[in-house]
Length: 254
Image (tube, rainbow, N blue to C red; front, side):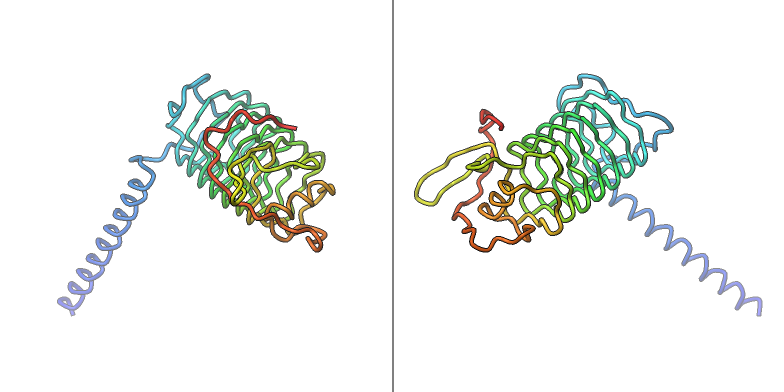
């Protein structure tokens, strides 16, 4: 009996060590992916990024746990918030142009009246987020989820919404496009490249989107958006090809 008990204890001990080893391996893999050895601790109070920081200087918050953080009057150009968890975060009148929010979680967050020009939101989750009054000109939302988000009175001049999930988004008082608008950069087969002020919308899902005017609906149908409210029957889609937007920052907005 004693020998059996000792063998059982040894087996449990090995299993515990094995589980511990696997956890350590997972932790190491996650750290390698994030590019940091240890995630920054969740802030207890308002978050303060380095003011006027040059691009990539504010890398200390990459992958950070910033749930329900308060960001007031923050100014930082090119801040790296990629992979950060900002769900429920609150921000008003922050200046984060060229910030990298790619792969970040921003569900139910609020970034109100903020400067987010040229910000990167690729593959990020902004479900139920509120970006009202913010400048999102030339921001990239490629394959991002904005389900149920509030985009009231925002600037989307030249924004990249390709394959973004915009289902249920509220566009009240947002000028998505004017009559005759064309995307920021556009290539017509056989006619070369041209550029305008409208957002890229190829493959964007607009199912259940609200407060889109007639100009916006026509634009969405013409330039490849999907599930446009009211349908696209009788609105022929233009045969255009999306191209990278780099080097075309001189286009004027509406």
